[in-house]
Image 1 (cartoon, helix red, strand yellow):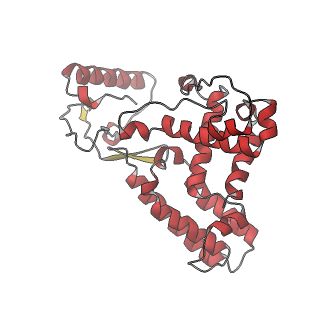
Image 2 (image 1 turned 90 degrees about the vertical axis):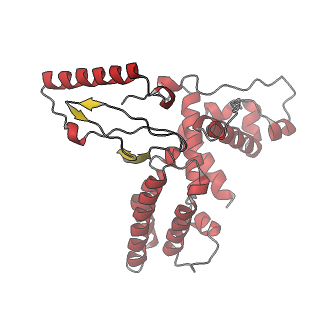
Image 3 (image 1 turned 180 degrees about the vertical axis):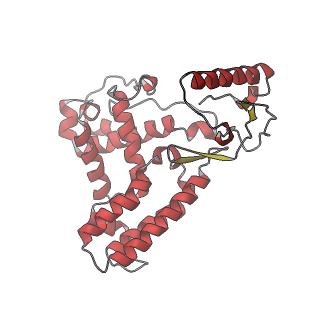
Length: 290
């Protein structure tokens, strides 16, 4: 996959170089006896909504590649504006079918089996790629409603019953907390050098002047916090780096208050904690506050 900035995509040299790379790719595939169906190869140009689609003449094996509005890649549907609206609509359709399955099977199987169905058919779809498509909560209203409906079906609750106690009863996370969990796990792995090398300097530790270690301090900015990137646009504020940094700082502060003795032993206790322990602490924190 090759990415070209939209502001320079009209440059003929860039298009010429891209066509040259595609010819080299085609020759390499032929030399290694690998076939590539150029008629099924798709081209997508990621751009802002107010940016016009440029005219391109990009060819593969003599066939012109026509830009499409969306493309499915490793199970996630990317649209040209990266709003993920189409992916969320497809996801909601899958979740509706799962709710129908729960509505029928709940009369014949136990609650434990219903939870297994939930994890296999519902949670797996919610969790997959949620860091990519789920950062904008304004688009997830319908998805949240479907998840609450699934929980009410499992517990045989009234369709208007408050859902938070039901999530707590079943020990299940809400969608927004599933996304937050994935964000802070990614941050934890990155800080411990367990992410790909491209993320090595993705997060910057926040410099905090030395002060006496008191409970009042961790109510504000505990050590181990990260520097929130400065942004001048809404796109920057909604970036994964910015969101992960903010959520890591919030989780660090809240868990340090709940585990003040651990914080006193080591100010970087959360970063140095084992991944499984970290997951359990974060999940328990969410469930406790439902």
